[in-house]
Image 1 (cartoon, helix red, strand yellow):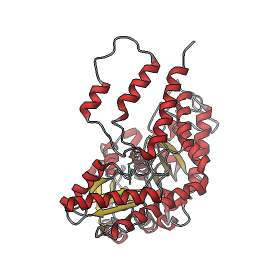
Image 2 (cartoon, rainbow, N blue to C red):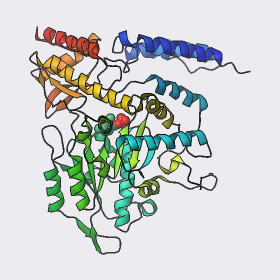
Image 3 (cartoon, rainbow, N blue to C red):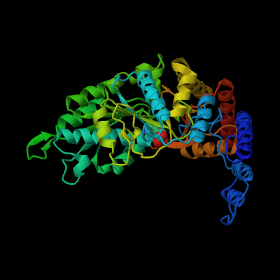
Image 4 (tube, helix red, strand yellow):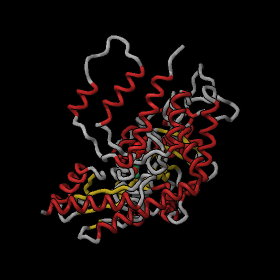
Length: 471
Ligand SMILES: *Cc1c(COP(=O)(O)O)cnc(C)c1O
């Protein structure tokens, strides 16, 4: 008999301790890299160790090196925590250890993802035929959405990119806001389009793409080019819009962008890694006005839905290009002919974890209202944070339309110093950025547990650090 009880109960006890201590735990790592190497390193084990001891050793060894990003006072990057239902479902996803690539390999995982896909489409208010892939994050969601776009704009130009690749293909141009996320550029590198395919479009002071600049770029160069058959064709064009800028939280004017882009037969992809969730809130939905008119969308479950890593979602209004870009046929696979979901039709992975399962549990536990409540509360807490700081001679650089606050303390040196001191002080944790050439502290309120007390305690800590820096 295999002994499961020892390692699993050790893991369970340690998990509970970690989670229950999170609200009061210092929000920052405590160990240096050297200390972590000492605790975890050593020679390659030559023989076996008892599994329970392995779990204990590992948990003790990593503890001081953990960045407690699930804390309600963690405001770094755009990280989320984990809700109880999604975390528990994530454990079981590991226990069941299904290969979710094919319906035949796990009917349960396929049906859970099918149901979850329909829920997501309804939550975001997208066309009912939208196809969905459960990927590792918005990076791969951007990659997958843009792969579908690449397929479709080249197909219209008479070119089969899946068969013939890109050598000799009509060139694709990608119009994207100057404040796009770096994962767009990286996705275009992976797709063989290269970053030189990007035509950067001017943005306003919040980082929003200017619709007039997009129209101007498309009108100035309507983009006739030579197709595969030597005839004149529309230049294959993709427009990348953004719902939620990683620094300011600002939204590109999606409705206008869709109208302009579609008039030029361009495909519109929306990077909505966290911002797409605004669509679930009746009060904030106007930020994504026109979102249902785009052609593909990327978002994350591990950010604002507070599902454990790693969990991203790609959605595509056109299932055919989505499948054409991703699908794979092999003689030894059992692929479903009866319309059941084979996720390798929608995902860049082959074998894969049943990533949709924790997303299912998160949505089932929260419901539409619970998700809207997280979005609304994070928005309210971001505004509260901005208000607490603003009254004390601190500049808030952005309009707090969502969950992001950009703060500056006079000059670059003071701002950077305050960020480092806050990280060392341990009440809360936030990271820095450079916004329009100026150093800034980024505050991202993305955790489902963050409340007024967390904000007030954190704002007080930031102001204490500022006072000390200013002497
Ligand atoms: C976080 C983020 C990404 C990348 O998402 P991952 O989940 O880290 O892959 C892309 N775009 C935007 C706007 C983001 O905020």
